[in-house]
Image 1 (cartoon, rainbow, N blue to C red):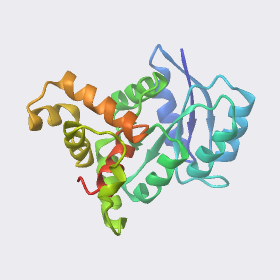
Image 2 (cartoon, rainbow, N blue to C red):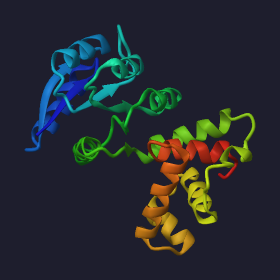
Image 3 (spheres, one colour):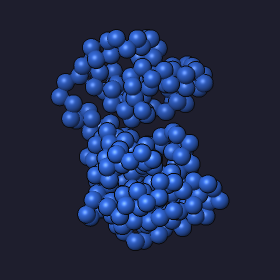
Image 4 (cartoon, helix red, strand yellow):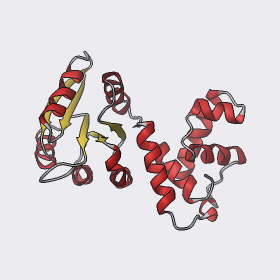
Length: 215
């Protein structure tokens, strides 16, 4: 059973997400919180919370501050940031703070449930729309590229190709078609790229690709 915290200052959003998640037999909504401070208190009181859906813009303590604060807890839940297009300026900071997932508030019920299961299994989940907004902001704010930053990472030529395409926001199937490789081979290359660049997920790898001038 995956135990989830739903954190949002809007009652309708919080209750709606809770109803959707509670309908899944593998998910239990362990708590709801209307701000980051209440959320952190709930996590400290209940270390068995596995996943937290956290809004960025909240009173008292916002979602970004709460995500950062979780780093001091020994059994912190995985965080899925729930965002809108207007929040993309904060998503890069949330990545650095340790968030494992990003969803738009208008996501479908199926996407919401799937995201919780994915993150609970140790993987990351990234809304394509959010990913695109983040990468666009990186391109706008990167003053210079640093091709030399990949020196010493021992990336093969093919891994550099894959990293560059990750930076363009392509998924494994699209990379497979572009490079004429099987999807399983692409998965292997992506895993190697994440490991060699020290990236936790595809968004971090994409940022590396853009900053290195590969995308």
